[in-house]
Length: 273
Image (cartoon, rainbow, N blue to C red; front, side, top):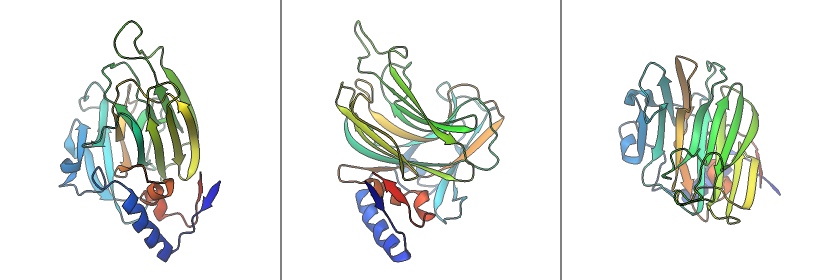
């Protein structure tokens, strides 16, 4: 079923107020540069690589600019400038996320992948890929999904080789545009128990029910910014990201989409259920 949301000034204000009530106010959300450390943790070789700036698309809202320079040192083994909300680690159960990314017009196309958003885990098996990654590979945008029902100890342990992996090609990369990813996930490493649905800019791009979607014992933390699993291939990269938003059991896709940068520029989107 499709639900049409007609955005006028009045209805937009009413809708935004209703949406805000459904988005978790205690974790993540918009903060100033000075208060950033009270809500988020940063991974970067230099704290100056993350700045609170005006939306490059002209909405008037504050967003984040993250930069990685190849000449700077790695952090935890990779070149990165990414952030994640404090006090957020869901091991199981229903959780909503909204992570939005804007690729600038001066982005240099290169075959080496750049991860711009991720659902990370605290699993003790360090060789396992993140359950969910949004990345730029060459001139395309893609989602990578990984999971495993095996534990991290014993005779039959989870490894990269025996994990389930899936790649979703979302289409050609378009610069100077917000990509707003909304995720509804009922996290579970158990066979036949998990569920996950994802929307990109209002379009449903993935849905899986009664399936494994995580790792045994893992707690999930959303990240945004720039992470390079291998070489960068260029001397410097920057992206813009929105602050990370989260919702709970009573949240809807409309609630989450309304607080993303995409909502400011859409006159009448069709949200695919």
